[in-house]
Length: 426
Ligand code: 5AD
Ligand code: SF4
View 1 (tube, rainbow, N blue to C red):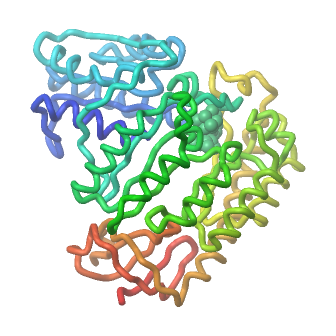
View 2 (cartoon, rainbow, N blue to C red):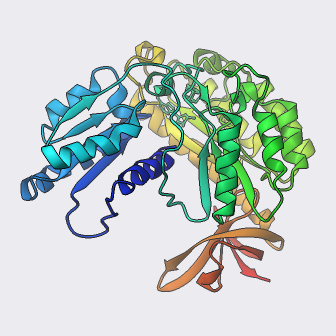
């Protein structure tokens, strides 16, 4: 989400004549911040602090801070107090104004702190992008979130769900294909509730169905799906559409029903397992990934064991694992906290458990041929290596001409090393 929003910020600034600064001192720096966990905020603060020096050597430089961190209660003004050299603080709902404000700051040193707390800001269409994610084009289909998971800051800083009009999404999709992008990833905090706010009965399944009608050599991915909204029709459409990747990111968060209830997730572990069963019945090779959290308030050893048990049962191809981080203003922040050393021990154990699943699944790839979209050529120990993903989302490294970046290759996997796969083009 943030990578794509940065593409938007870059596009807006470039449409005003600014260019990317790859070396030397920049005239404009925009920090697009995240506040999902405390470490994201600390990283942003550390990075912003480093730019005090730039302002000393180039007092005309413009420094802007945007994104989720600024949108928390009172945080925008607190940032400006902490770092008086910041010229612009802009909340999440009016990012389109960044171009105008940067221009003003460059020409007349106008400083601004603008945080709009409207939970349903209108969607602004027609904003230019500077896409910088290789052969993948990100496309937002919706903004915001209505779910209020008790640990999560997103609904507070991104507002309620607002879906883009079908025509706008389809037009952007068509443009991405005609611009040569080979992969499109649909973005939303909860893509499965796309369209619910528009009330015309056109939901995520209908959108996928329409996107699947475009023929050609390209792939469609999407993220993120909330298990409570994953319906059979969506699973059927993915299974029946060759261009929609059999790859689903389905965050579980915790394997304990007690903790899921406290998290306000609205499903049980059995509900989750039933979805997995349906997906695998239709798409046995579907790559399913998840997000897992340890150390949520009240989590005891039994709850944690339930999460480990789900790792063994579901066999996700990959799991993003997090230590719970209290977020000010969310319900979970006022619940009794789990000691840091307990969370640390649990996350290490969780990672080790998932790693052994990943290793086992990786071994099963060896000997088979996969259609891989070559995404990049990277220098590995002085040798250029190509890398790309299978339909299921697994990264494969292989040798070949860097000209192949952006095209589909048939690759036979010859070796696996924990999460990494290696192969040769056939
Ligand atoms: N602490 C830790 N992890 C969190 N996530 C969201 N909020 C928090 C928090 N307060 C994780 C969830 C979510 C992913 C994007 O980030 O697992 O799915
Ligand atoms: Fe946060 Fe839950 Fe919304 Fe995901 S679904 S963004 S975890 S509130």
